[in-house]
Each structure stands twice: as structure tokens, then as C-alpha cells.
Image 1 (tube, rainbow, N blue to C red):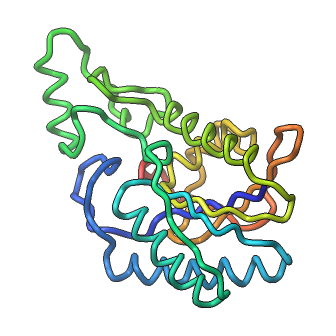
Image 2 (cartoon, one colour; image 1 turned 90 degrees about the vertical axis):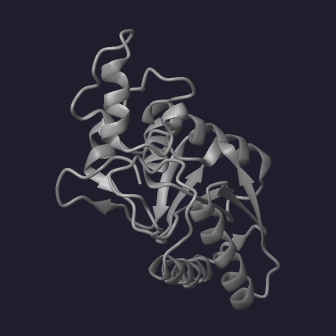
Length: 228
């Protein structure tokens, strides 16, 4: 199976708030990025003579689901295929548990007032291994392991080395998943990002190894956020 990883388009995001589970829709620019993704996917798939599988796996977050829906509508119209979208919790971005959709300063103040926990490190939001000591929270590495597990399961369920399956989700979770799959070094996780709506294609082998076969990661200009 060839997994086409697509980061959702830009969306209406609250400022200074870990974006993991914000429930807001795409911006007009984000919708345009989803339409561009469909055209790019069609071009690459046709150039490589790959076969597109009809079911798109998507994050349940609205920005992911809507990106997948636009791709399904546009790509289906361009290719003549009937595509459908199915949502999966496993493709969500890193969760901050009961602190979901609070601002960074609010989360830090909650921890500061809780006598059970130390203050978080200054770079906690971008720290791949740090997990907020709050109910339901996970680290970026744990989120990546969850996404990698979903990709591995799908690879065992689908047949054919030229079959392309689309996965629409989130940049940080995808990058950490690529690390768990042996494709990115730990240093690459922070050095790279993903373009909105531009696919990265990963191919699985029968032996369980993975390699990148098309698309490109985005090189960060500086120290950006690790979550999208």
C-alpha cells in the first residue's frame, strides 16, 4: 500500500491555544488548499500509474473531515471515481486531555496552582516527549505512535503495491508517525513540517518497512510550533 498523507487546510484557529481538538471550520484559503490537494493527487497518481482506493481515512476534527470531503468531491469528479470519507479517532492530533481548547497561559496557570505537579518546561508545547499531567493528555510521540499504528493496520488490510490510500490528518501527528515508521530521524521532526494540502507518499513493504516515494516535507524557516 502507498499511503498519501495530507495535512488539513488552514482553519479558524484560536490564538495562543494548542490546536489539537479545536472544532472550527476551514478558512476560504483552507478550502482552496483542499481543492489544490485534489488536483495534485490526481496528477501524481496518474503519472505513477497508481490505483486510488475509494475510501479516504480522515481525522474526526472538522478541519480534517472537511478537507477530506472536498478532496473526495473534487478528485472523484476529476477521476470518475466514487470516493467516500470515514473518520477515525486514531488520526487526531495530540490531545491535551481536560485542558483541550484552553490557552497556553491558562494551562500553565492550572498546573502552577495544582500542588501535585511542577510547572511545565518553557517549550512544553513543542517537546515531543512531554505529556501534560492532566487526565486524557498524551505526548506528541504517543500521538505519532497512535497514527503509525493506524497506518500499519491499513497497510495489512489493503492489497497491491500500486494501491494508493488517502489519509487526511494533522502535521505534527503525521511527522511523529513517520518517525515511528523509520522515515524521519528525531531531529527531523522539529526541522520539518507539512504543507497544507500537499501530500507526502509513503510506501509499505511486505516486510513491514516504509519508504517515501513522492511528495516533500516543508523545511521550517525557524523554530516553529510542533502542533498544527
